[in-house]
Length: 309
View: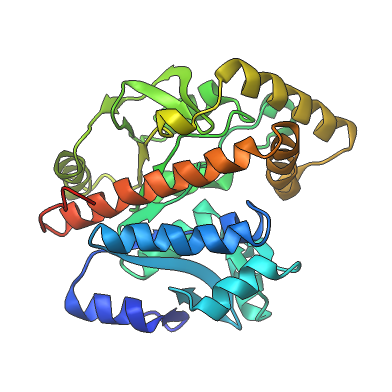
């Protein structure tokens, strides 16, 4: 095992027993939701994965170690701390060397999951090409990580704050397949449809697992985006969220918010402008992704998927 890794007792036992494990990021806890809903949601998402026959492994950097699986106390620390650093690929060595508290983004979680031998990672939405990137060059490191790190990422697409068309073009250029679940359209986080199509529609976990195994068996490095739309009853109206997103983006520009700060700013502003409804949608989609991700992890291990999970 890699010397920087520290497995929780639950994850270590699962690894020893050969059970399927699902990685979870931690920026959704530290930067994606307010306290205490963030910690409560993290616990509930972990339980969804357990109920579906897999073992959750929330990942964070604590005291110079990459923690694969967190205790109740560690979840509380991440959720309530104001100084957790948002960690992407660039930040990993600094936060580990300085023994600071770090919450992993999609990119960093993919790196840590691959180090730990975990093939499936569940998140809310991946990062992408930001609007106006032709001037700012603001493109999430998540996309580069997907191009060369062998982890399947289950998400609800990308947030509507991004340029979804350019994000999909970037993924295509780098050979990252985008698979949709239950519909041909690519979802846009708060809404089920973005107006763009995924590369392939593969609905069942066994078929998704077969696709992923085939990709990696061919020596085609990199991840797979498994785009799972938010449940219909929890989705927000597209016209409403588009209008609110445009307003939040304008305010971010006026206030000079850039870089790693922009996504937390926009999510918080959208939550305010929707009267908290966007947070409820966020929680619902993460739980739904956890179910799909757990079923995929079980299928990749060759075990029967729990039909009632």
